[in-house]
Image 1 (cartoon, rainbow over the protein chains, first blue to last red):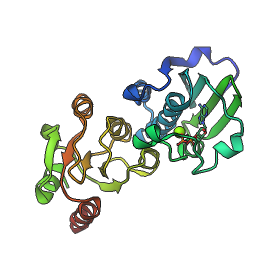
Image 2 (cartoon, rainbow over the protein chains, first blue to last red; image 1 turned 120 degrees about the horizontal axis):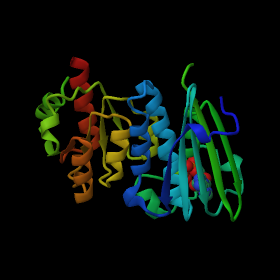
Image 3 (spheres, rainbow over the protein chains, first blue to last red; image 1 turned 90 degrees about the vertical axis):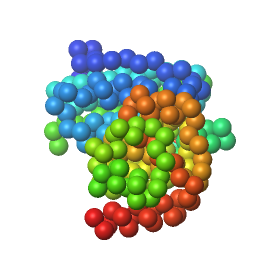
Image 4 (tube, rainbow over the protein chains, first blue to last red; image 1 turned 30 degrees about the vertical axis):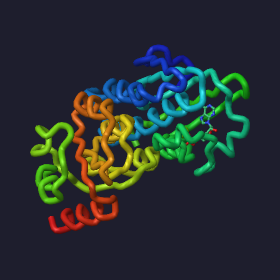
Amino acid sequence: MSGDDLSESLEGIYHIQGRDFVDAGIVSSEVKKSLQGKGIPESIIRRIAVITFEAEINIISYAQQGTIQLFIEPDAVIIEANDMGPGIADIDLALQEGYSTADDSIRELGFGAGMGLCNIRKFSDIFELTSEVGQGTHLKSIVKLNG
Amino acid sequence: MNLETLVEALGLKCKCCWEKLKNTQVRGGYAGDLLSDVMANSSAGDIWVTRQVHQNIVAVASLKDLAGIVVVQGASPDKDTLERAGKEGIPILVTDMAKFEVVGRIYRLLSEG
Ligand SMILES: Nc1ncnc2c1ncn2[C@@H]1O[C@H](COP(=O)(O)OP(=O)(O)O)[C@@H](O)[C@H]1O
Ligand SMILES: [Mg+2]
């Protein structure tokens, strides 16, 4: 399913600029549109929309810039989010529901509840998060298409 | 119930996409101001009741296929919010009522059928 060479199933690469809350959600909308009309159930598309949105918001909130890549395989959809940013020192802590380092400007917009990574994990079938402090963060989420 | 019936019953003001009200079905509702909460826990066809006015609410509603957004307590949606709602076809309704009252009324309306 998710062999190492994904290049053939790459559907799109989307660039995200840090701190650009005005355009927040645009990449997720693009991803959603790319998934429509391909026979993928709407409920699965909505799960992927949640994953992409939270990944997009995290790049905007915490990193300088990043990308989201969408892969569509015959039996799975894969979302990869890579950013250049501060990284995450303690991944277990970041994954705790309610833990957030978001500042007030982020919270005023309704973000920063500390639920983003939890939700990504909850809506993924396979979830990987790795990070290097001072370098950036890499997130991979796989959603299976058949059960 | 269609969104037009709900809007009329509660006396909501429509700020965007009135042409969609008649053909939009409301299947349930969700209330909240934390976008991650609404992303994770709302269902398609829900009417969403919130105090948020920033344009990110349109992205959330559109990604989750929500029926529309009710902005409460007399808050006015940003100009950008209405523009984006127009583009994405997300109805934006406003009211002076507080969230508690709006949610209670919608809940009763939906359970009566
Ligand atoms: N891409 C990222 N780069 C750096 N830190 C991150 C990134 N994503 C998440 N974090 C850290 O993990 C915490 C929890 O993230 P999340 O669960 O999405 O909640 P929230 O964004 O609401 O704080 C964030 O507050 C932040 O400290
Ligand atoms: Mg987050």
